[in-house]
Image 1 (cartoon, rainbow, N blue to C red):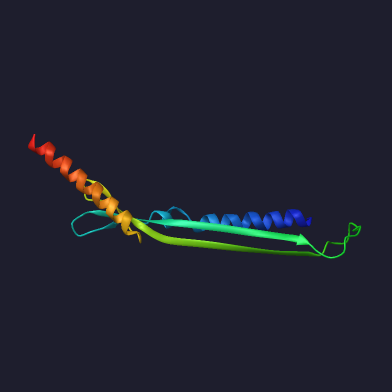
Image 2: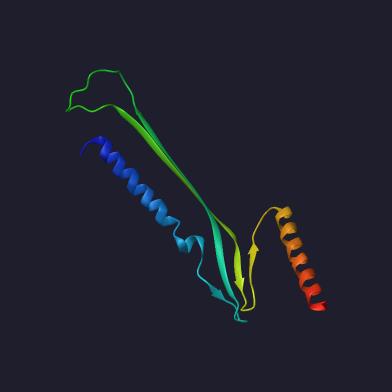
Amino acid sequence: MDKKKKIDGIMEKTAEQLTALADVNTVIGKPVFSASGAQIIPFTKVTMGYLSGGGEYGEVKAVKEDECFPFAGGAGTVVNIKPAGFLIDDGKECRVVRITDDPLDGLIEKAGELVERLVKKDEKEE
């Protein structure tokens, strides 16, 4: 097997293993049921990065078929799994509760809930 095919095989196997790491059970968690019967489903944000590279070094010369190039290479992988929130289904409605560090995101979410409550209140009064 030549070097290029071998390296391609290693890269493909690594990519498969990284993909398996972020399967559906990692991104969308298993449901949990509360005492009141509400279904709570956690979800996460998965960020993955993979970098590899390599090159030949040394003196440039004609290489016979039974010789190999001097080769240097490296690879790195980063996987970041961060809780993003919960889907809550209480049987009447389904809502999203996000986990965020940004206070502005929380304010926007609460404003949306307030507008929704006001619209429902107006509909009931009519």
